Length: 432
Ligand code: EPU
Image (cartoon, rainbow, N blue to C red; front, side, top):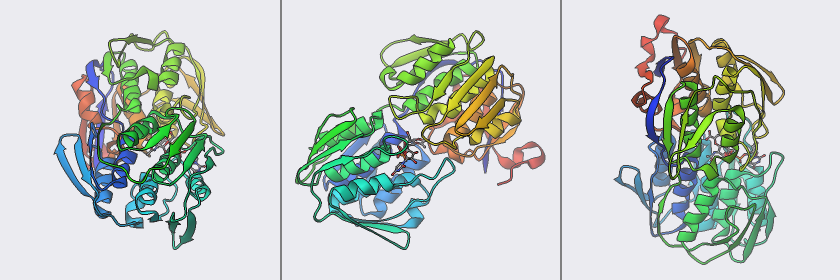
């Protein structure tokens, strides 16, 4: 089992280019099943989640070829509709196959994903949307079966208790593009990854209006064709590297940071007093650290609100800023697993319901810590960059699901960070 060791206190410096977005690549790979023709996806990040999605596409019968680094060609001439539990349980995001299978085959038989460490993760809205289209849905033995033979376009409201659903919107879109009639999705997710999926689907011949807005209108077509599409840069990765620059009190330029995708995040950085400069097209530079910064309050919300996927990483910055900051989680009210690990490094954070109360201004000190999920692992590494002494982050396989070579790329910016086998930890502290 790998661990990451960070010796904190090194100012990062240099330029980094972010990869393609994980959360766009996964539904786009699923969308390649919507046609028998070849789809080429470029700028696909090299992540364990992506490799896993490719395995699932092959399981369904698609021919998947790596044409070059980051370039995948998928040809799904004949596919089968069943996604077994062994595959779905390994990656919850495999549920985004549901809409693609329904769109292409008019039937799907997919194992229900369970919850995960960040919360219960239901799919009731996905199923409600498909049922509104006239799909017949049945549950048996942990699987959901969908029969879309009589589906027809109609109006669907996709909002839930936490607002819109990203993968639910992706699923309904992929089903609706090949469903006869006009489908109108109200309260659709507006995340850049959904916009990018819409653009890919349009290249495949789908008719979608209102892209980027909460109201999507889809006119079903009889078939789709192949496409060539470049995945949008990963806004969460961009935000994470910007925070690494600030927390290490370095000077870091991030290429592929689209300000239009990072609005709420940049607004909070600016409110805190962080210096962020526009350094060219899709390029942002941070320098000057956090010493003169002020506390801020954050509420995570669906896009264009503050992204839940940047919440854990931002909390590390707030733990360093003197004064009281609040973070309220409106997407995953329990997504605070990183907090107890940050407390072990000396952070003063209390959780009240869905709110983290951060009494900032501490200098953290390195400690062995345990990553619980993808964004928590990034947060702990950021904490290690700023802390005094050595931080050992265990269970970094979470990190590899969503950040391409995070540790090596931070090392290239000057971080003292190295990946080791857990047996190399002092007192062999890994519990895995
Ligand atoms: N929800 C429901 N019913 C549903 C679907 C969702 O109540 O049928 C609730 C969820 O429980 C949650 C909220 O609605 O409280 C939003 O969930 P959403 O469906 O939007 O999340 P998702 O599509 O499962 C994607 C990303 C997550 C990211 C969320 C929110 C992918 C593969 N995953 O998940 O990414 O946190 O949107 O932006 O796109 C990550 O990358 O670390 C990650 C967890």
